[in-house]
Amino acid sequence: MPVPDFAARFGALYTAAIADVLDGLGLTTQTLPPAIRPLAPGMRLAGPAFAVRGRPRPGAPYEASIRRILELLGDIPAGHVAVYATGDDTSAQFGELSATALHARGVTGVVLDGGCRDVDFIAGQGFPVFTRFVTPQDSVPRWEPVDWGHEVTIDEVTVATGDYVLGDADGVVVVPAAVTARVLEAAETVAATEDEVRAAVRAGLSPLEAYERFGKF
Figure (tube, helix red, strand yellow):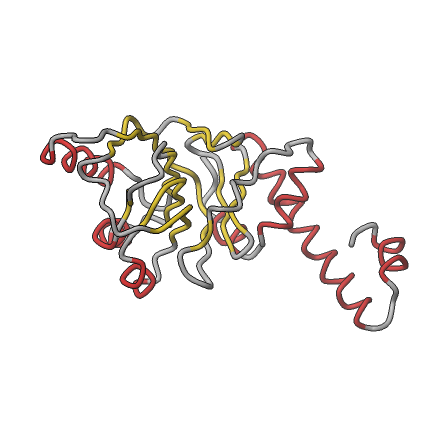
Protein backbone atom coordinates (compact mmCIF):
# COMPACT_ATOMS: atom_id res chain seq x y z
CA MET A 1 0.00 0.00 0.00
CA PRO A 2 1.39 3.46 -0.84
CA VAL A 3 2.88 5.49 1.99
CA PRO A 4 0.83 8.44 3.30
CA ASP A 5 2.80 11.24 1.62
CA PHE A 6 2.20 9.84 -1.86
CA ALA A 7 -1.16 11.60 -2.23
CA ALA A 8 0.25 15.09 -1.72
CA ARG A 9 3.25 14.42 -3.96
CA PHE A 10 1.20 12.88 -6.77
CA GLY A 11 -1.35 15.65 -6.36
CA ALA A 12 1.34 18.22 -7.17
CA LEU A 13 2.09 16.49 -10.48
CA TYR A 14 0.12 16.08 -13.71
CA THR A 15 -0.94 13.07 -15.74
CA ALA A 16 1.25 13.85 -18.76
CA ALA A 17 4.43 13.64 -16.68
CA ILE A 18 3.29 10.33 -15.18
CA ALA A 19 2.36 8.94 -18.59
CA ASP A 20 5.77 9.88 -20.01
CA VAL A 21 7.57 8.09 -17.19
CA LEU A 22 5.42 4.99 -17.62
CA ASP A 23 6.16 4.97 -21.36
CA GLY A 24 9.86 5.12 -20.53
CA LEU A 25 9.47 2.00 -18.40
CA GLY A 26 7.73 0.17 -21.24
CA LEU A 27 4.34 0.44 -19.51
CA THR A 28 2.51 1.86 -22.50
CA THR A 29 -1.12 0.91 -21.70
CA GLN A 30 -1.69 2.75 -18.43
CA THR A 31 -3.91 5.62 -19.58
CA LEU A 32 -7.67 5.13 -19.36
CA PRO A 33 -9.82 5.80 -22.46
CA PRO A 34 -10.02 9.50 -23.38
CA ALA A 35 -13.81 9.36 -23.14
CA ILE A 36 -13.42 9.22 -19.34
CA ARG A 37 -13.39 12.91 -18.42
CA PRO A 38 -13.70 15.04 -15.28
CA LEU A 39 -17.31 15.75 -14.44
CA ALA A 40 -16.54 19.47 -14.02
CA PRO A 41 -13.60 21.73 -14.90
CA GLY A 42 -10.81 21.78 -12.35
CA MET A 43 -11.53 18.36 -10.85
CA ARG A 44 -8.39 16.43 -9.90
CA LEU A 45 -7.79 13.26 -7.94
CA ALA A 46 -4.82 11.23 -6.72
CA GLY A 47 -4.93 8.13 -4.58
CA PRO A 48 -4.72 4.35 -4.41
CA ALA A 49 -7.32 2.52 -6.47
CA PHE A 50 -10.21 0.47 -5.14
CA ALA A 51 -11.44 -1.63 -8.06
CA VAL A 52 -15.17 -2.26 -8.63
CA ARG A 53 -16.55 -4.64 -11.26
CA GLY A 54 -20.19 -4.58 -12.33
CA ARG A 55 -22.55 -5.88 -15.01
CA PRO A 56 -25.91 -5.02 -16.54
CA ARG A 57 -28.87 -6.72 -14.90
CA PRO A 58 -32.05 -5.49 -16.54
CA GLY A 59 -35.12 -6.04 -14.43
CA ALA A 60 -33.23 -6.83 -11.23
CA PRO A 61 -35.44 -6.69 -8.12
CA TYR A 62 -35.28 -3.09 -6.85
CA GLU A 63 -34.66 -3.90 -3.18
CA ALA A 64 -31.87 -6.41 -3.85
CA SER A 65 -30.29 -4.11 -6.43
CA ILE A 66 -30.11 -1.03 -4.23
CA ARG A 67 -28.92 -2.97 -1.19
CA ARG A 68 -26.03 -4.39 -3.18
CA ILE A 69 -25.02 -0.92 -4.38
CA LEU A 70 -25.21 0.50 -0.84
CA GLU A 71 -23.10 -2.40 0.46
CA LEU A 72 -20.44 -1.52 -2.09
CA LEU A 73 -20.47 2.17 -1.13
CA GLY A 74 -19.93 1.23 2.51
CA ASP A 75 -16.87 -0.86 1.65
CA ILE A 76 -14.90 1.78 -0.31
CA PRO A 77 -12.02 2.77 2.01
CA ALA A 78 -11.17 6.34 2.99
CA GLY A 79 -8.29 7.83 1.05
CA HIS A 80 -8.95 5.66 -2.02
CA VAL A 81 -10.21 6.28 -5.54
CA ALA A 82 -13.05 3.93 -6.51
CA VAL A 83 -12.51 2.76 -10.10
CA TYR A 84 -15.64 1.24 -11.66
CA ALA A 85 -15.61 -1.08 -14.66
CA THR A 86 -19.38 -1.13 -15.07
CA GLY A 87 -19.83 -3.09 -18.29
CA ASP A 88 -22.81 -0.83 -18.95
CA ASP A 89 -23.40 2.09 -21.32
CA THR A 90 -27.02 2.99 -20.55
CA SER A 91 -27.37 4.04 -16.92
CA ALA A 92 -25.75 6.07 -14.14
CA GLN A 93 -23.95 3.96 -11.57
CA PHE A 94 -23.16 7.02 -9.47
CA GLY A 95 -25.06 10.08 -8.29
CA GLU A 96 -25.25 12.87 -5.74
CA LEU A 97 -26.21 10.82 -2.68
CA SER A 98 -23.43 8.34 -3.39
CA ALA A 99 -20.98 11.24 -3.72
CA THR A 100 -22.21 12.74 -0.45
CA ALA A 101 -21.75 9.43 1.37
CA LEU A 102 -18.23 8.84 0.03
CA HIS A 103 -17.15 12.44 0.54
CA ALA A 104 -18.29 12.30 4.17
CA ARG A 105 -16.24 9.16 4.74
CA GLY A 106 -13.03 10.58 3.28
CA VAL A 107 -13.00 8.73 -0.05
CA THR A 108 -10.74 10.60 -2.48
CA GLY A 109 -12.83 10.34 -5.66
CA VAL A 110 -14.43 8.09 -8.26
CA VAL A 111 -13.50 7.02 -11.78
CA LEU A 112 -16.37 5.55 -13.80
CA ASP A 113 -16.07 3.57 -16.98
CA GLY A 114 -19.79 4.11 -17.01
CA GLY A 115 -22.31 6.81 -16.21
CA CYS A 116 -22.99 9.52 -13.67
CA ARG A 117 -25.98 11.74 -12.91
CA ASP A 118 -26.79 14.69 -10.60
CA VAL A 119 -23.89 16.54 -12.20
CA ASP A 120 -24.63 19.98 -10.77
CA PHE A 121 -25.06 18.66 -7.23
CA ILE A 122 -21.79 16.71 -7.35
CA ALA A 123 -19.90 19.63 -8.88
CA GLY A 124 -21.23 21.85 -6.09
CA GLN A 125 -19.75 19.49 -3.50
CA GLY A 126 -16.37 19.54 -5.21
CA PHE A 127 -16.14 15.75 -4.99
CA PRO A 128 -13.90 14.55 -7.87
CA VAL A 129 -15.66 12.28 -10.35
CA PHE A 130 -14.34 11.21 -13.74
CA THR A 131 -16.90 9.52 -15.96
CA ARG A 132 -17.42 8.21 -19.49
CA PHE A 133 -20.90 9.72 -19.89
CA VAL A 134 -23.76 11.38 -18.03
CA THR A 135 -27.41 10.37 -18.04
CA PRO A 136 -30.42 10.87 -15.77
CA GLN A 137 -31.28 7.16 -15.98
CA ASP A 138 -30.60 5.34 -12.71
CA SER A 139 -28.72 2.05 -12.56
CA VAL A 140 -31.34 0.64 -10.18
CA PRO A 141 -32.75 -1.78 -11.30
CA ARG A 142 -30.66 -2.09 -14.48
CA TRP A 143 -27.16 -2.82 -13.18
CA GLU A 144 -25.39 -4.47 -10.26
CA PRO A 145 -21.88 -4.53 -8.77
CA VAL A 146 -20.42 -8.03 -8.99
CA ASP A 147 -17.34 -7.76 -6.79
CA TRP A 148 -14.89 -5.18 -5.51
CA GLY A 149 -11.47 -4.82 -3.92
CA HIS A 150 -9.73 -6.96 -6.56
CA GLU A 151 -8.90 -5.79 -10.10
CA VAL A 152 -10.69 -4.73 -13.25
CA THR A 153 -9.82 -4.16 -16.89
CA ILE A 154 -10.94 -1.02 -18.70
CA ASP A 155 -10.20 -1.34 -22.40
CA GLU A 156 -6.53 -2.45 -22.32
CA VAL A 157 -5.75 -1.05 -18.87
CA THR A 158 -5.68 -3.31 -15.82
CA VAL A 159 -6.47 -1.52 -12.56
CA ALA A 160 -5.75 -3.47 -9.38
CA THR A 161 -6.72 -2.37 -5.91
CA GLY A 162 -3.64 -0.62 -4.52
CA ASP A 163 -2.43 0.74 -7.86
CA TYR A 164 -2.12 4.51 -7.91
CA VAL A 165 -4.58 6.66 -9.87
CA LEU A 166 -4.05 10.25 -10.98
CA GLY A 167 -6.71 12.29 -12.79
CA ASP A 168 -6.71 15.83 -14.14
CA ALA A 169 -7.95 17.81 -17.15
CA ASP A 170 -5.99 15.53 -19.53
CA GLY A 171 -7.57 12.30 -18.29
CA VAL A 172 -6.71 9.43 -15.95
CA VAL A 173 -3.50 7.44 -15.66
CA VAL A 174 -2.89 4.30 -13.57
CA VAL A 175 0.45 3.48 -11.94
CA PRO A 176 0.99 -0.19 -11.00
CA ALA A 177 1.60 -0.61 -7.28
CA ALA A 178 4.94 -2.34 -7.84
CA VAL A 179 6.46 0.78 -9.45
CA THR A 180 4.60 3.55 -7.65
CA ALA A 181 7.57 4.98 -5.74
CA ARG A 182 9.86 4.72 -8.76
CA VAL A 183 7.37 6.46 -11.04
CA LEU A 184 6.66 9.19 -8.51
CA GLU A 185 10.32 10.08 -8.09
CA ALA A 186 10.96 10.03 -11.83
CA ALA A 187 7.87 12.15 -12.57
CA GLU A 188 8.96 14.74 -10.03
CA THR A 189 12.28 14.96 -11.89
CA VAL A 190 10.44 15.26 -15.22
CA ALA A 191 8.26 18.07 -13.89
CA ALA A 192 11.28 19.96 -12.56
CA THR A 193 13.09 19.57 -15.90
CA GLU A 194 10.05 20.79 -17.81
CA ASP A 195 10.02 23.89 -15.62
CA GLU A 196 13.59 24.57 -16.74
CA VAL A 197 12.72 23.94 -20.39
CA ARG A 198 9.74 26.27 -20.15
CA ALA A 199 11.85 29.05 -18.67
CA ALA A 200 14.60 28.58 -21.29
CA VAL A 201 12.14 28.69 -24.21
CA ARG A 202 10.50 31.80 -22.83
CA ALA A 203 13.97 33.35 -22.63
CA GLY A 204 14.48 32.72 -26.35
CA LEU A 205 16.03 29.25 -26.64
CA SER A 206 14.73 27.39 -29.71
CA PRO A 207 12.78 24.15 -29.18
CA LEU A 208 15.61 22.06 -30.69
CA GLU A 209 18.24 23.82 -28.61
CA ALA A 210 16.13 23.26 -25.50
CA TYR A 211 15.79 19.56 -26.30
CA GLU A 212 19.55 19.24 -26.89
CA ARG A 213 20.29 20.99 -23.61
CA PHE A 214 17.76 19.29 -21.38
CA GLY A 215 16.95 16.06 -23.22
CA LYS A 216 13.27 16.85 -22.87
CA PHE A 217 10.59 18.79 -24.72
